Image 1 (tube, helix red, strand yellow):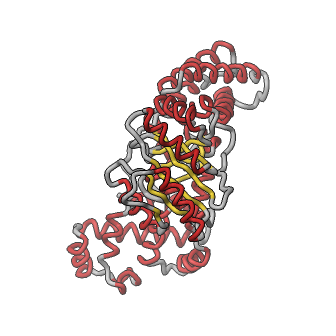
Image 2 (cartoon, rainbow, N blue to C red):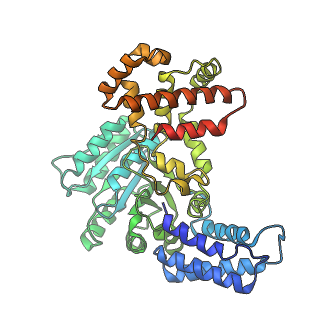
Length: 445
């Protein structure tokens, strides 16, 4: 996410490395690089210039302040503060007033509206304790109704659809009545998109909004389209005055133009960001956290929040006791792997940890990172999982055949597991944390 922008901004800050203080000369050179970085990220030149002018004013106003702070660090702080302000300052919430609350989803075809609708339904169900109803109002795209039906079944949220109707306005109105009669407190209306902004599409979405008076109207945009996304958002807002923006596909080759420009251009906040196809990969947009990611500082707050969501206190106490007794087994290890996987895409998680993202940017890490380990453990008998020490050569030979790996790979895994178990035991006594982290890294190879 934003790797190219981050690298270019680092060049700007390096110009100040070794400097004793901020001067007009070194600030001007850094400002030029920052502006280039923003324009390369597909930020409108006018916005980039206004942004860097503000940074320059702040830098020159601070050049004689905070003498203990290095010039490069001071410039990073100034840029971060201005990035946060550019992207909205603080997180914006959803308006869920109404009986039921109605959320209208708009956007171009291919922007990820239907997938986002499913993610939003799951978010409201699990994080806000709501009872959402998904509504299929895309009556044009082949398989659109089937797609939202599959998503609804996957997340166990009902879907309102009328297979014979071609009137999205009436479908939306009927869905709201259905929600009232069935005790659903939020209605999410997935509308049709087009390949371009056209009069027919805009007229239709305008009629839908007028007929249902939604509590919240969201515009979903593909973040990989950069400044074009902002221009499209402006065209939509001119017609339907939406309340907020959703950036999808942030796990792709995102330059950053949309995230940095949309609030400034349209005056509406980014409310959510989506980073994959899985239904649980939806996050509230926090400008300060996004600024930290852009500047390569990670996002440790979001990482901790994701970890806490999967944290089971009773399970943790049980594992702690087993580690102290040095009886940690393959069942326990498998349980820990599953908890990590539930937190989301592994590389995205690593990018949240300060400094780790740079180390892994050229490494292919995905949800299959632990596949080799899992295949070995799943090939074991229940007795072998519970008693790692009984795995002799004949058992390892059977394992190798069962998981499609070599005896050498089985032995290497067993050695790594045993060393990791020792390190964990040492950690329970306050020792060996660095060694244990290295072992966990090696287990994925």
